[in-house]
Image (tube, rainbow, N blue to C red; front, side, top):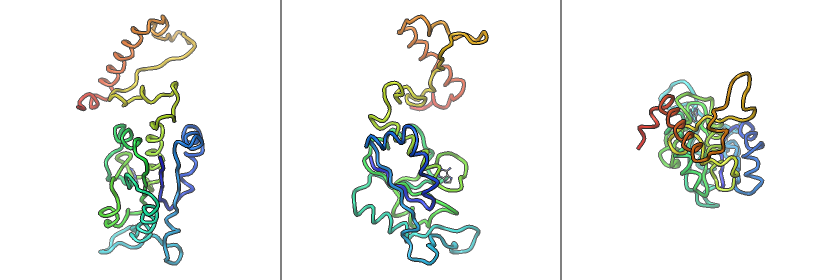
Length: 226
Ligand code: ADE
């Protein structure tokens, strides 16, 4: 998979890709991540990429021209499955979206700033608008990092058996069951007996029951999904 991220703050975005699972997935050649500084695509003085909004009102708006130039250049080099715009008024990211995006070849992610982008960008260049939650960030960069992490860990070969995503919370619309490690007793706090006796069918059944109970208690909305 190849991910092209268009941003005015590449430096804000780089570190999540320089550690742990994301770093290893890049080193293994399973994913390529490229950063494009939007300011490299403007002819205006001071590398201006935003302007006042027509009709008046507080806040600057990102102009269509540099965004169009950058996206057009990328599209001239390869086909893209999605051109995603990170914005608080997009569809809220969930595991299902991450699963389906982990199957595509090439995506562009545009990070918004200020009051957002000129609506004509959204109308003509963007194929998907994604929010990471009902709160407003200073820009789309942190959202893009969250989206990339959620997608990349699902690409086959990125996680090994021990860290397999198949047992993750949400993967089957259930929260994950509780987990324990050594010691079996700490200050009188005991690990459930069932996990210690090596009866794997029983352990599996216990985990399923716990996942269901946890979901019913903490996220009953997930059980309503079809
Ligand atoms: N940009 C600003 N707020 C955002 C959010 N909640 N999700 C994605 N991008 C954003």
